[in-house]
Image 1 (tube, rainbow, N blue to C red):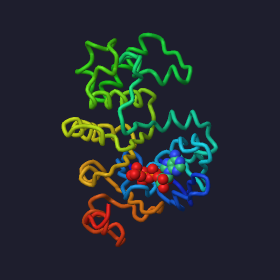
Image 2: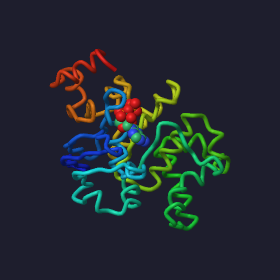
Image 3: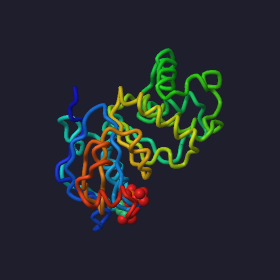
Image 4: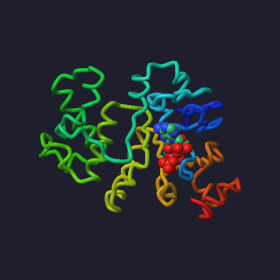
Length: 252
Ligand SMILES: Nc1ncnc2c1ncn2[C@@H]1O[C@H](COP(=O)(O)OP(=O)(O)OP(=O)(O)O)[C@@H](O)[C@H]1O
């Protein structure tokens, strides 16, 4: 059954006096894949980073309005707890360069000061790498550095690291833009499996990717959420002229 996992009401984000996310009202359904699309500089990444409270880490940045995870106000929760519940994968794969594949997967536990007993740790590593579709490729080299892997494998390692913390929502900021087409295809395939366990919110510049992987698409323009709809519906019959102009390539 579909229910709302993340909801915002009159949500705004600023860099100093620069108002970059404007009055966003959205209800994101659980176990869906959401694509966030729009021209460069329209506030997609900023909005994504507001969902797990990373925006406020930038000096001068602030927000107002409301954002809920289920019924809890995200901005009343402890930010570390928010980031455990709402994980993030970045544009460029960023495994910790000095850590092994094994230690990269469980790095989040060390960062929050949680020590898992060895059998649980082993299980967590295997489970997370399996969910990230990487286990078979790395099971015999768990103690090698993560940076020996290919770009696509490194990105799946970063996905495993996020999965290991058992988040409910996973945020992806242009997760395949630094990858080759084959690695991109394997990450896109992975999204289909991941959404059974998580809610995925993916910023992408690539409209074909949004069409391939997402159930719903949010179209942002100049900080506003112009349209949020079923992806097929949006690509075939957009309601707003700005969405139509964007998807027909009149601006990028
Ligand atoms: N660290 C920052 N400090 C100040 N302003 C910023 C910062 N990051 C982004 N901005 C500004 O906020 C606005 C929105 O940027 P944001 O990165 O959210 O857009 P975007 O839609 O994700 O763009 P792109 O597709 O190019 O990544 C832009 O005007 C940008 O210049």
